[in-house]
Every structure is written in C-alpha cells, then in structure tokens.
Amino acid sequence: MTYNTLDYTVKDFILTLTLNRPEQLNAFTVEMAEELVHAFDRASADNEVRTIVVTGSGRAFCAGMDLSVDGNVFGLNEQLRPTMEDMETKLEQDDIVNGVRDTGGRVTLAIYRCTKPVIAAINGAAVGIGATMTCAMDIRLASEHARIGFVFNKIGIVPEACSSWFLPRIVGISQALEWAYSGDILKPDEALAGRFLKAVVPAEQLLDEAYRIAAKISSHSPVAIALTRQMMYRNAAQPDPMTAHKVDSLAMFYTSIGSGKEGVASFLEKRQANYIDTIDKDMPDFYPWWE
Image (cartoon, rainbow, N blue to C red; front, side, top):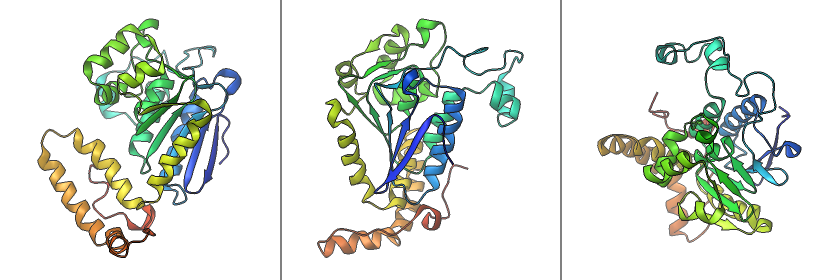
C-alpha cells in the first residue's frame, strides 16, 4: 500500500515511518490517522520489521490537528449525541468509529497493540496530537529544535489519544496535570527534566541515535521483544502482581523452549545470537492473553 501522508521505508529490520506533509508542518488529518493505524498494524505483522522509528518530514514532527479543514476539524459527526452506553456497546459500529471515536486515540491504540518497539525521533514541533501520539511510543528522543505542547485546555478541549492513560504513567500525575492545565509549549530541556524524553540530541544526530537504539533492539528475539512490550504495558496496569506472575510464567516457559535455546547457546559459545523466530509463526498460543 502507498500512503498520501506518510513515508514507509524498511531497511535492516528498522521501519522509518515519516509523517509527510512538510508544507503543513505534518499537521494531523483524518486521512493521516487512518494511514497511521494501517501502517502500525502492517508493521506489527511484518517479519521484515523488528523496530519502528517515527519522525517528521521537514522542520516539524507534527504541529497538531489540521484546523484549516471544513466542518468539524476533528472529523466528528456533530449530528450525533453519543453516550457512554454507546461506547460500551457500539464501539466498532461505523457511525461510532467514524463519527465519535477520537482519531488520535485510534492511532495510539494501534501503537499500543503493536508487536514492535516504537521510537519517536521528535525533530521539531510536536503539539497537540503531535505530542500525545508519542506517549504511546516506547522511547522518545528529541532534537534541540523540538517544541512539545499538550495545548488542549488552552483551546477549550481535553487531552486525547488515550494520553490520560499514557502520560501520567510516564511523568507522574502532578506533572501530567500541570502540562495539561497550562498548555505551555515545552522546550526540550523541560521535557527531559520531566522525564518525558530519554535524551536531547543535536538535530544532525537525531536519526542516527534512534537507529543505534533500534539496531540494538532488532538484534534480539522478535518473539521475546513482542511479549516483553505487551507484558510491561499490560501487567503494569493490573491491580495485583499475581496477574503478572501468571503471564510471566507462561512467557518464560515458552521462550525458554524457543528463542531462549539460541540465546543460552550463544552466551555459552561466546558469539552473537542469531534469532530466526518470527511473530507470525512462533508466538505462543496463550498470546494475546488479554482477549
């Protein structure tokens, strides 16, 4: 599939997913949302992809929702009056999917369910959905040109893209609320101090650093990485560690008789491991355990 708003390039098991509307500062649209959902689901099932790097074309990462479009700028159907019961019972119906559900949230849910680690390389402005979509990504790097803003309250709306679930887990509830209440545009050092970013990297080194991290991850077992990603996100949200123990036990059992055999052998033989397991053939039967 070709995309109108994205560039999808795979090399050395690393997918570079580039938001590609540079003249509009990669402003987010309903079309971009649909393409991002497709791209993350596609990458999740693609054995040639082991790690994903997301960045922006030109001088911005994503300047937020494109507010220049006609009608409801968020792509919502203003004729509807949805209820929480609708969200519980009709979530996958077309009128709810296309007219009610937050498009940014559909993207971050696609990232959340993805089997591959996701690294954000924030090269410029990341405002609104440009900031919240990165909350679902595992590692966030930024250049000195980045500007990050959770600006929703400033324009009379609320944080979206499931960020009320992700952001407090990253920076803590107090910091998350301060950033949301104020709507301030954060410089990279402020986002780093708030533990939103792993590092601030010179612009000319940003993608190289993202690729360095991605290459290290991509050298490991795809099955072990996929399980680890979902275990961390899902088990950390459980009320009791016994839930994690049950999942850990099955995951440890099946990886120990799968990719773990090569891992142990390579350690004992003092050589680089050569993992040949794949997501489509070697995920244990208990996955996905949450369904």
